[in-house]
Length: 292
Image (cartoon, rainbow, N blue to C red):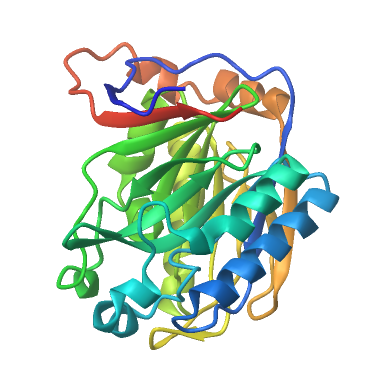
């Protein structure tokens, strides 16, 4: 397993041998209460595992709720730290079920706060974290941006990670695709109204632009002053919606990512293959990890 930053590949990778069943989940986070949200996340992982999911994706900052004021006022309580013992129930749930998880959290990194996706392997190990690279305007006074993309490999599937506003920038998903990713997984907060419109524009566009699956985990209810829109969903590599949750209920969306569908999309829409013929593209730094 390597967690060192590496330059992105210039061409897309091959295809996985088998489908990958994933669950994107949405639930009401308890404001600022990491133990309560960890317990809820662990329960959702176990529930998703019963449905056969190999990986579970959670919303942005699910472990605290979005809650920027609470996090800044008391980061020791509302953000997680390296080696945080409060995360043990998530690790236990992953290890007990053989399920990987990508969990949104605010992270205290020395003097800095980050908006991160924490990656737990199916053996329960904390493997790496991805730090949000594109901060929303209201986040810039609170958080520091990440400096590298992140690709996670599980069962032959390469998965590019993003957090919310990252998905609005075509370059972000494109960097994942150029690193051989087959899917783009994003925990987010999208609100009702314009936020919903953004999510329904960006995710199918990122899917079709890069002929990869896109997966969204969103919040439900109110958090951090936002009235969120739920509708966690999965889009196919042709940009079509495959599955979608409701707007305000606790829900799991379980979907199989199919290598045959991926191959057909990439043979039909040759965007990545044609782009690979272009020379002189700068490589983005990315962290790459393989989950056991």
